[in-house]
Length: 449
Image (cartoon, rainbow, N blue to C red):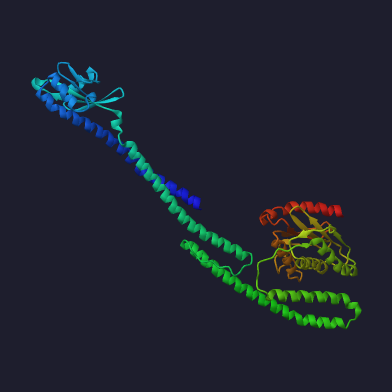
């Protein structure tokens, strides 16, 4: 912005200089030309009284010498005699003698002033004054230099003023941008002191009001989450008491209930904590998948569901917390168990790309008729709230990835959870690659089956 304003100032000052200084330069040149001719006319006028008194060559010679510039003056007498240093040809002198006023003639590169003087008996003498070229431009170069300096000073001054104004605008814009970045990173305490033009001041005040509103909304959300979590404690406690009466055969259910109570405790603790800037975390996606499939395998065996875990042999690091990935995997697998008949097969595939990791959960169930509607929270149908897919989508988007739903090779639905691992690339560029990754993922599924 500062560079643009400086260029605009230079352009404006240049146009002003061209509009005013160029005509002034031409006027100065014309004044110098007229001054030289006026000086020549004055010299000629000084010799007119001498010619009116006498035409004696010796006296005229002394008169020419007394002017101090005899090399520039010549006298053309009526009888053809010449005194001084004549330069004009006879034809030019004769033409000047026929007029009654002084004229200027260009003879080659020289400029001559010819002044006719009428003597007694009607005869005419001509005074010739040579005007050197340097007299015609005397002082013009210095004047043009002064005008050029004025133009440069005008441009430099306008650039400095524009730069100061631009610096003020840029400083206010950068402060607003840095504050917005900090707020987006989780620093809710950031505020700015509005400065700059009225528009930026209004934007700064709106930013401060927005930050205050965000704090209020987050506080209300935390209170609501904590309240809901507390309400879950009563039914969970009743459920645990019921499971305690069932004996050892309910051990697996008690473990699941313990994990649910731990998740509720984490939600309450997180809801009560003030918001902080996000911390970069990582986890091993392969390890999380192996752990969660071990948990779900018992239920799958009870329901006689064939299942397979593909690609989760080595270590695959992704930029999300292990607890968040576990919750998402549990939600997606829970959807498989909830919305497909018993005995329906499913597969979980871990695909590692150059800048993204994909977790693909496919089943042989009836599929999802409207994938786009299913991705909208609360509209998945079939008695579901759609929170599982919404949690998965938000986890994918938090890393710059995406969530996709399409048909699987098993005949049912396939949920693709793509997590971006290259954090230096913008999410929009990564999102444009999902279509290309889909084909590669389909080939991987074909090979595994």
